[in-house]
Amino acid sequence: MLSDRLLQVTEILRSSLADFEPERLSGPDAARLLEIFAEIEKLASGGKLLSARRVESSNVWRRTGHRSAAAHIAQATGTGLGPAITTLEAARQLGSLPATDEAVRSGRLSEAQVKEIAGAAIIQPEAEQALVDAAGNQPLSVLKLRCRRVKSAGRDQRAAYDAIRRERYLRNWVDGEGAVRFDARLTPDEGARLVAAVRAQTDRLAGEARRAGVDEPRRALAADALIQLACGHASGASGASGDPRATDADERRDPGHGKDGNGRAGRKGSAAATDGSRTGRSTGPSHGGPTTMVHVRVDHDALVRGHLEAGEVCEIPGIGPIPVEVARRLAVDSILSVLVTDGVDVTSVTHAGRTIPASIRTALIERDPMCVVPGCGLREGLEIDHVEPFAQGGPTSLGNLVRLCHWHHYLKTHQRHRLERSGKGWVWLGPGETTAGLPLPSG
Image 1: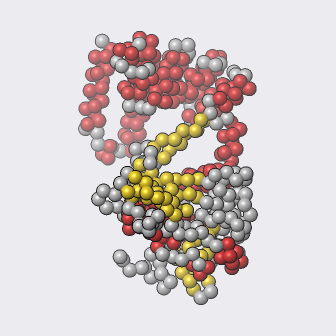
Image 2: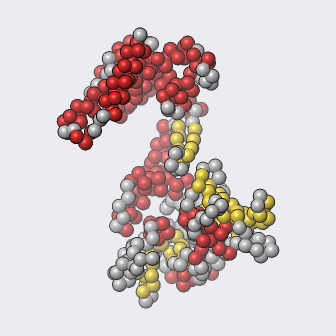
Image 3: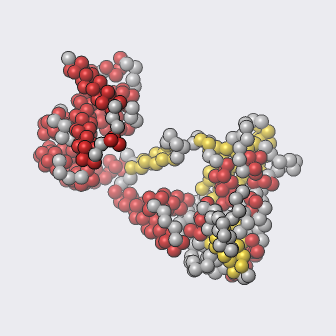
């Protein structure tokens, strides 16, 4: 039987990989093995597609207790339900696409190529052979573009647009390392607007990074740009620079001074970090939408101490644990509200600290018309920062406040850069540097 033969092949592959020591291979030998394994992978993908089609039509998935054929495939292949659904869609279409089916059986197409070709060729069958031929000598990105064009030419444009619009979505999940991930489906115009906005903000951040002499990957800056745009911290947003009425993100609440209504310090609680608008920033739409809020459940003593001890927690509900240091950054950069609890009962809600008075804000804008970091010179989108962090006892006074550009504020808050007074000016120090140019003592 076919299954017996394939099991023999599987055992040969398994034993080959068990003894495989790639470091002993020459470069050309490694390249040749890569080609062989890629061909095996394509053949295996083809067999998986053909088998998946029969799994669905035979209804075997019902007898094994799965909710759908896609759920059966997802479990068997160790993938998510989404990829299993697209695999099943491509498997169904193969029966109507002879050129693609033949290429699959001969191991000339990867699963990704099959999915792209099948989705387009099922709409315009006359384009199938050209797409199969293109897959053999063009990168996948080019093949995807060609397939999109085939789909577009074979559909009513308005109907296709409306279908995308109806099926638009934004999803998020938490991956195995605790990072928040996103996936979105948008219409071409809305997607283009978002991409353009993120690209423009990324360019601004890249310029700030270059001026600061910091080398960060563009993809990391793009993530920062998206956060700023979504949370209302992007430069160029509504809110004139220098408006003393604007609420600054650095109006900090001291996590070390939270007390309940009777003056007692709370032990356990939930911290809600609210990003207010920064000077020259907007907290949301120009019509005055709500500010963003992140809830953090953290033991009060741990937040003040800076680390967890046995039995204490620090986490974002629904996502998972975060370091206390991250929670403290929220306290430093945001308005911090502490939901004080006693066991499971909420006893009070406390707000530690106070806002920056309008008089101090006005004097600060007058004193610091540009970023105070020597050589920076940026005048737009400045953010107010406590030189000595508020959460560490730094006062909300004119002498302990400065205005920084977004990039230098980020470096100081998250990358351990420092400002030190030098006469009437300031000295900008990198991690471990002192005014004498010597490393800081350990500990």
